[in-house]
Length: 551
Image (cartoon, rainbow, N blue to C red; front, top):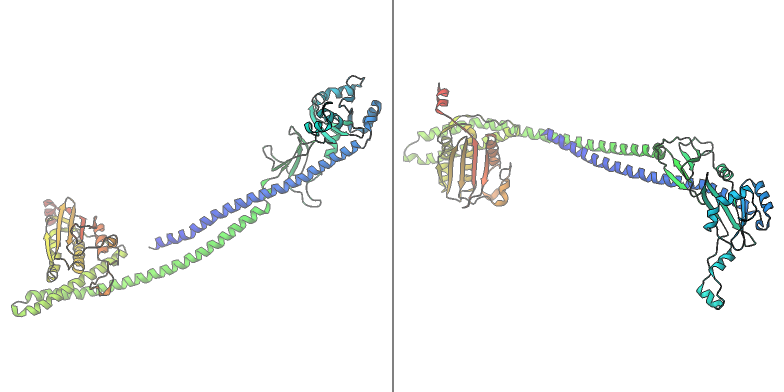
């Protein structure tokens, strides 16, 4: 009992802790993922600030290039001289109002640098990658239709959308990325410059910070890298050294004209989660520890209370057993001397005394059965029931029990009919069999006196002995059939129903039957009443067994 109680209390403590621990782990994982997502948002904003430095450098180069007003009005020699002095410009170019390349002109004398420029940019001019002047676009969008009015022309050919005043064009040639910046001047011509790639990249990288941390603070374990279109590193900073298989935590692409380049951020998981993971796991562990302490305290309290109740119950059972043992001896003497006196009385004049004596004998027998049930129930609670098998005759034992009830049943108009079918000696516990049959007939005596008969039948088949007890009383209602073998359960507990009993007789009878290798079941009879069938294991005794036992 205590072991089952300990297991139950252990489950009560462990089950909630296991469920809460699982929920806590899931919550920590969700929180950690949320922190990682928030961390990525913060880093993306940080990389956006770095990309803003690059955008500012690009804007500065645009202003520097556009500062030269009237480039379309300069001569080729002047454009060559200005490009030579710039350092940022590799080659200037000019498109006239019709969108044709007038410098360097494909059919005019050119320097070697200008011929190389025309070769590198050949696809640019063929594909019209750089928009022509606004006047040329309007002329292209609205062809000459002299026969139509101006209103008809506007209805048929709506105005073209406004063209940008400046822009970038990038393409790949030979050693990598090449850049052209173009803009429109006051003369409605498009002028532009192919940039010196090395100088432009150097200006961009010079705008990037040396370290990602805050000045004066401890270095942060992270790494930021600027990669080109092929994934080659152009610039990087930070103290963290990512492994070759590490994936970037965040990746941000730059704005045009460097949209093929990207900024990547690397950091170890420990730096990403930081103190959050430690404090969260510590908080979860502390909460579970407090809950475990509370549950263990409650379980200990309930265990002590249950142990105290069990000790008190065991003391009560022990007291009842001791009292029953004390009552058994004088009751046996009373019964023995009453039966002896009954045998000695004779004559009709002594019939009233004999009737009173029969009552004493009957009640002493009933009290003996009650005490026997109490003692058996006490041994059952202590798991101390063991059958003691001896040689005996089943029919003789059953007949002796019926004789004890026959007179009292007869006074109430109930006839006991016995069909003997187990005359062969067998090995069984005679006291156990007598107690089981006595409890079944006692039930008839209490609940089935409204009937007119009780049938007792014995059968012997191999190692199994069957005893059936069927009465013609009111029977047991269907809703009570499943519980009649429970200890202390009674179909009716009303005090004024005229039925006395403890409610342990059938429970003891079934336990004794199962202890004896069999069972006791309640069968539904077809003609009313209750029918109990008892089966026990009883090995038949052979003649040689009898001779060896006697010799």
